[in-house]
Length: 121
Length: 112
Image 1 (cartoon, chains in turn blue, yellow):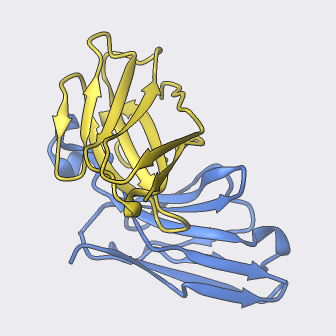
Image 2 (tube, each protein chain N blue to C red):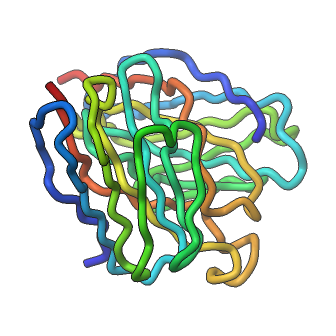
Image 3 (tube, rainbow over the protein chains, first blue to last red):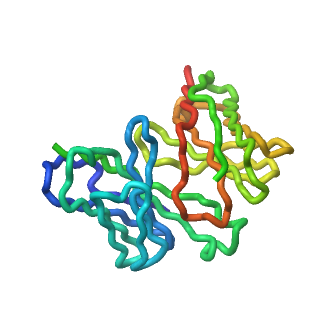
């Protein structure tokens, strides 16, 4: 089954304690991305990756790191979490136009993981 | 990406068709209309997309007006499980893979 998985699904931690949220996809997608969702602010992109070893900042990258050593995995790292990073996090993946065969078939269909609810005390 | 406008909320009786409108009056010729939905706190889910022709799949139908300035997502027989926030997104197909601008969407409540 085609899917994006995230772990853990729920995490409560304390300020300053490094943590990693894993994301994995089994669809051979080039593109992967992390979003955070907060009440009233909607979904905002944190980081994205167009290929292995290629990552770039989204709209709200401060306080986060990512890595893309393998195509299927895109972990989100919080080196020193703070309470303002308490949020619901989603990983997503999709084809790129070059993979999909051209604009018409690059659906912008992003597949999302189930979410990770993080609380930083 | 062109700006979209959706009503903040709508109700629909179970078994009836749910018609969710979206206004995108500044859409350009190479921009597609995409619909996603998010059931409470779950990851957003792709529903359907279109350029100028009406589209139908197993989940929904998409009706795009001839001038492409608005569209309607139709859930033909809404069920309680269709209660969700529905997002209309407009973007160029060549921008596949970039951040989707979800906006605030329409919160659809399907009632028994």
